[in-house]
Every structure is written in C-alpha cells, then in structure tokens.
Length: 137
Image 1 (spheres, helix red, strand yellow):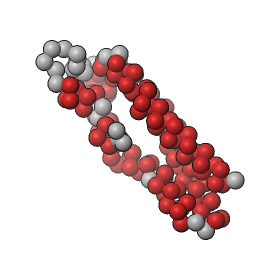
Image 2 (cartoon, rainbow, N blue to C red):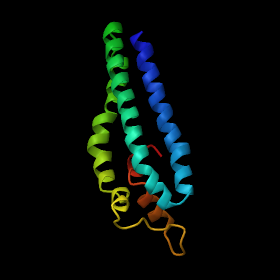
Image 3 (cartoon, helix red, strand yellow):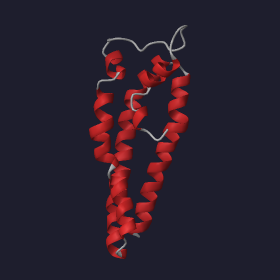
C-alpha cells in the first residue's frame, strides 16, 4: 500500500510539473509578458502547496515502502522526490521572491514588452522565466 501511495504521489507530481512546463507556462507567455507576470503570483502559490504536499507525501510513503521491502533503490527514489522541497526553498524560491512579479504588483517597474522591435528574445525568455535555468527544459 505504501508503494502504491508513493508511486501515486510521484506520478501526480511529475504530471503536474510536465503540465505546467509544457502547457500552462507557454500559454501564459503567449498572451504577453504583462499578463503572464500578473497571473504568475497566484498560480505559483497554489502550485507550491500542491507540489510540496505531493513531494513530502511521496517521500514519506516511499521511505516507508523502502523500509518494508528493504529496497535501497526505492529509498533513493523517495529521497530524490523529497529533495525537491529544500531545493525549491534554497535555489528557486529566493530569485522568484524578488522577481518582477512582486514589483509589478506593487506598482514598480513593469515587465518589458518582449514583442517590441529590438527586444532580444533570449533576454526576454530569461526575464519572463527566472526559474528557467533550474528546470529540466
């Protein structure tokens, strides 16, 4: 039963991550940077709760299943799934806290219009996705 719960949590976690990366984020960016930035904050908060819950539940269930089965491979998978929580808190969360999302919500600098003439597409992609360098993409 613990193995099933661990696999379910890991599968839901992976499915959500793939959906956000392949569908949700590109759709927002295609609507323009300003809309993407405005939508990012509430979506990020909800996704954080869901992904962290799935990661912790999968890690705990996986460690329990590894202990029951005496399987170090299952334990390694559980630890790797659980490792996304501290990785997110240490590596991904700090840059997004100070991103243009918060500034634009407080009336600070607006995001640059990347469709304007002379905009460098690489810089626009990096600016609109500060966490991109840490993703599997």
